[in-house]
Image 1: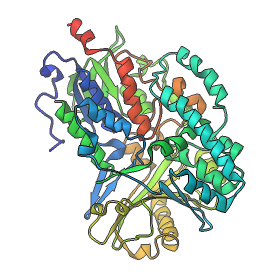
Image 2: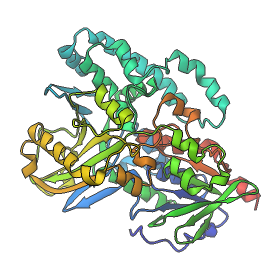
Image 3: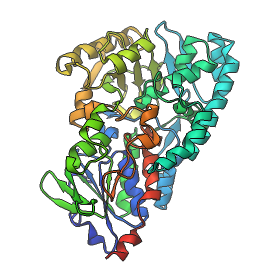
Image 4: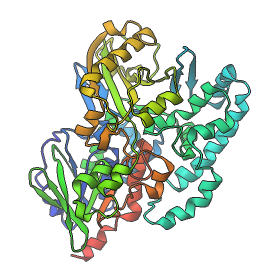
Length: 516
C-alpha cells in the first residue's frame, strides 16, 4: 500500500458519481475518524496529509529495527473505535488486538515510593491505605464525584456541537452544580489530604496538555472514564490503529494522499463558503465540505485569509493560552528491562513548582517529570529480539518561552538518560542501540502546531466548550474542525469524539445533490 501516490481520481473527487466531494485536511485520529463518518453518510472523501505517511501525532518512526509510536499511546473508551468499524460493516477486534493494561500506570515518586494505579477500586484503596489511611474514604467520595462529572461532561456534552451561545447557557446550571469553576487539583484536594495521593489523582490533565492547577475540574471525569473502560494498548503499537483506520477508509472507496500539503482553503467570498483547497503545488481540489484536522490555531492563521476572519483573528489567537510543549526521547536498548511496566509516570521532586515553570514562567527547569512508555512490555515485536523500545516524554514550555532547543536538546536528553540510568533503567547510558529526539520545534515545523504546543489550546474553563474553536467554523460556511484544538478537546477519546460531532452539523449529502 503506497500512500505517497495519489489515486487517479484524487484531484476530481466528484468522479465517484453523484456523491458530493469532501476534503479532510490532516490524517490524525480526528481526520481519519471524520473521513470514515463522512464516507458512511455518502460523501466522496479525499484525505490530504502533508507528511509521508498517515497518523499526524500518531505517526510511526522506524529506526534500526525498532518501531516507535510518535505520540498518543494511552487508549481509553474503545467503544469509540468500535463504532467506526461498525459504520463500515466490520468488526474492530478482527483488525486490532487491544490489550488491557494492569496496572494502568506505575507511578514512581522521587523518593522511590511506587503506586500502581488501576481500575480495581479495592487494589487502589489498599495502596492509598499504605500512604494515608484517612484518604481511603475520601477516594470513594472523589470517584463518586468523578462519575457524576463523567455522566454530564462526557456522556451528555462530549458530542454537543456548541455552535451557539445558547448551547453553553443550557449547561451552566450543571457546570455550576459540578463545581467546574474549581481546578482539577482543587477538586482532588477537596477529598484527598495526602500530597502523594493528590498527585496520583490529579496528573491526568498533563496527558492532554492541561495544568492540573488551572484546568477546569470537568477533567476529573478521566478518572471514572479509565475505571469504566480501562486503559488499553494495541498490539503493533498505536500505529496499528492508524493502519486499521486507513483500511476502513480505503475500503469505503475514499482516497488518502500523502505528501499533499494544503496551502489555502478556497472560499467563495460572496457567499462566505468554503469551496475546496489549494495545495502547495498549485493543484486545486473542489469540495462541498472541508474538514480541517490541522492545528486549529494554524487552520485560521495560515489557511484562511485574514480578511475572512472576524473571530479567530491573529490577535485573538495570540492572546489565547496554549498547552505545554513536549520533549520526547525515543530510544531502543540492547537489553530488556522486564521490571518496567508498559506505562510509567516518574514524578520529580517538585510538583506544583515544576508545573508553574512549564506553564507560567515558561523556563526549562533542571528537574523534570516523565511519562516513560515501554510498549515491548506487552508486544516484543516492536523491537529486535532481546531488546526494548521506549520513549521518555517530558512536559516542557511551548515556544512562547525563551528556550534555544538547538543547543538545549542534547543536554536535556543527557540529563534524562542519567536520571533513568540511576533509577528505573540501570546502566541505560551504555545500552542505547538507537536514539531520536523531538522538541516543540519539531511540533511547530513537522506538525504545523502553533507555538509547538503539544495539544493546541489549553483546556482552561474559558477555552472549553463554546469558548473553544467550534467544530462548525465561525468564519465561513462549509468548513468544519476536528482534533485536539476544538471541542471536546485533546486525547484520543476527545479527538475521535470531535469527528462524532460532525454527524449533527455537516449537512446530509442529499442537500448538495438537490443543489446540483
